[in-house]
Length: 322
Image (tube, rainbow, N blue to C red; front, side, top):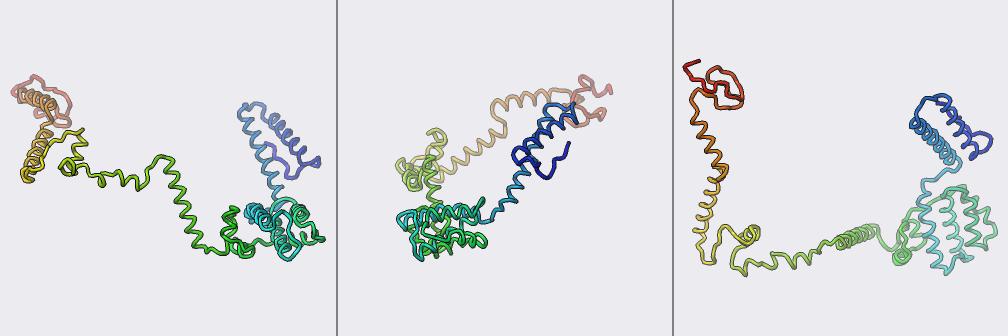
């Protein structure tokens, strides 16, 4: 691999970068002519990736970005909407309030990327054409710019909660609402958004669910049975194993249930009709074998030769013959 140079060629940034990529690709082909097409494509991607990193580094060094630039980019259109709503237009008034708002906007523009001074002068000419010394003011603010917090900016602009809601401002806090109230409001809005999303998905509300719940309707009372019996009949397809009546003695019902469960337990222990039939046949076959025949027990020793196996290696052999 040929290492790229750290400095750009004198022929310019755009043309020089493209020529350097071509030169590196040609050198790769000359240095390793036997490499496959896939490896050449991977080498080309690595070269271009290094070029992109170099250009990004040069851009960061030439245009340093403030850590508040993201906040400033969000606040600038919100502040412009607030000024246009208060002053009935894009032009600021030629008074102390207008000058204060202009300085506030220039501080936010100073935290953006790019040619900051040109942006500040363009905004001043568009919104404060009455200011004579715009260049001097812009240079002074660009040399030492500050960005207030959301609470400080809300108090400075006297932003009310009604204006904030109407203009959809999110990066500035109102001066007439506390931080705890804003947190509680955001929580309520989050809960409401989740509720609306569940309704769109078809989930019933709590009131609708309770209105149609079994605890509210109680259909077992109309049939004169208990809830557990009604649920058992519903699970069994409308037929219950025990059909009690309204006048039946609870003690007799308990005895009948106990006897029925005992019979079911014995049936499970025997293995059922089909399983029990196969088991009885196997037991009779095992009992019919002579005493010297192995029982095919896995892992058990033969009673004659004491060997272990899974087959009858003494089939038909009598005890006296061994």
